[in-house]
Image (tube, rainbow, N blue to C red; front, side, top):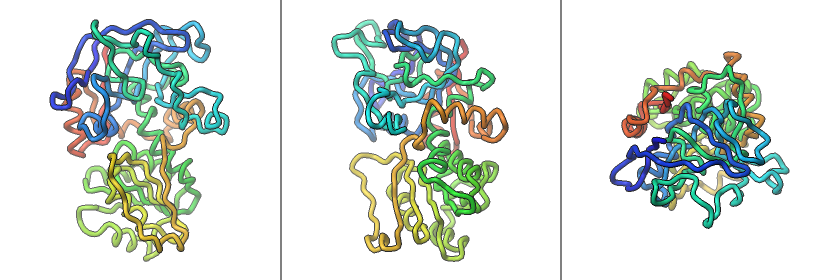
Length: 362
């Protein structure tokens, strides 16, 4: 199979032919239909986060099951699936309390004495997030394979694996936006736009979209934003405060991952407000928050994959899309071939695109 391999941070991704092993007991072989380009991949590609090489990046995957291991009971060949990186054991405290997305069981990976899932003929290769989605096939543990309605277009379904779940879930689950509340979303890309949609779906009274790019702010209105703030045209906090009559917002959802925007999220809160951080920062970075703010009952929290229940929420997102209640078509800025993947990451760096996806023509 063909895959985009990262061997050297200075060379970018290179298309190679690799071998994929057969599924073991609890593994599933999926023929990839589409794979999204995410900022998390960009962090690895840019060397911002240390990661062992060589590896295959990509963790927003949809496809069709080709083969299953002898113990797999949740999916079968022919099933359409979203591959989520929330591999889980099913029996730990996190799993039993509805937080399977927090589980990180080592038994979902192959041991050092076992043959690698992927190899170049001489050595094994790593799989980012235990998936390695920039490839024609992925071999993964069954707990990350979520069967979905076959009516769902697979080139849109891949977005549910990370970006949409992270953003929509951050508003609906982690933040728990309630009807009538005011929400600000900082960053209107592949995570921020679904966060706007999630806040809108929860009945937020006002949804304020914050970004530097005019085209993204226009797009934000189509996802449910009632107001927009151009971050390049003045102080963001002052603009948000002006829109809210000096009160601030009940929820600020940060979808970029920079210390400065995380601090902005906290600073724009009303008394009792909550800042929810979706963006992934770089190791060693810190934020500074005035300690006196906490007597106003302001809160800050993280969000991992929107605190979703993958096997329940991802099929629910599919149904919302099929009912016309979750805009995904507008989220896709461009469809690329695997050979164009480095161009896709160049576009992602520019900040001009919402989401690019690699489409595989099998």
